[in-house]
Length: 336
Image 1 (spheres, rainbow, N blue to C red):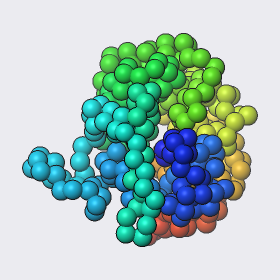
Image 2: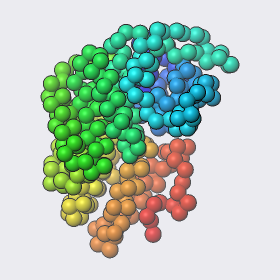
Image 3: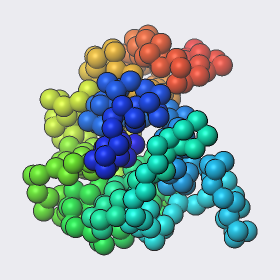
Image 4: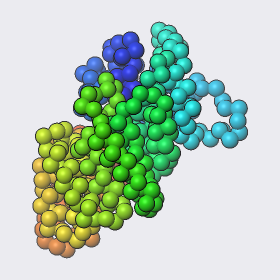
């Protein structure tokens, strides 16, 4: 969503207008645009789609109330499948039209005309692939790669898309295709220029290392996964705390799967030392998954002591996310 905000702004939509449409402060908008925070609320996606007339399926949403009913019976489902390259290409090349928003007629999205903006559609596909890892991610990644070949070459973008495709293939246990896609991502990133595109989501060596660890974990190549996970943590230590937390979660996960519980607990304490103010739905969800992975080892003293500290830290994070994540009926997942 940060990429969409940046593109809107680059096309002449003021940050004040974008913030008002999303019902957020300009400071929060700048955080989204600069990659300091990620949009976690579904309602914000819906507000932006409605305010700028972005078809719902392009943002992973159901058909919006103002969209015409599809004539094709195969498209009657609210959860329309991910668009193909032609859908997103049309989005990116329709001539721009802008209308001032009103209470009954929100602004029409200023779809950019230059062919280079096909990269925006490819970037949307990459983000959608990341969000839909277990449902349609490979299709989103293929769509993005198709779009990326139609515009200017941006190796960091194709590296991200190939990585997302590799993750989806790894989840599906397609070992050889996943390995090929991951190799393609590495080649792309090796050829990436140092310059940043003004609105493409960043994808660097740390991101590739982090995703590679998850891909290799899902392929049950745990020794190689460990190497990449440790590299990701080392590269993230001077970066954003959210990314560092996610990399440490992956590292603990891999240690547990390798039956190295003592090292997992040691790294887990480093994980909990990540800034307490860090509030992220994704971090909390992955922490819950990590706790479930550790629970079978609860009889081991160091794990039991760690889980007590873990639950205290989770409660503190949940206070920050009370308006985003409903409390579990039974309290902390897995707690006894």
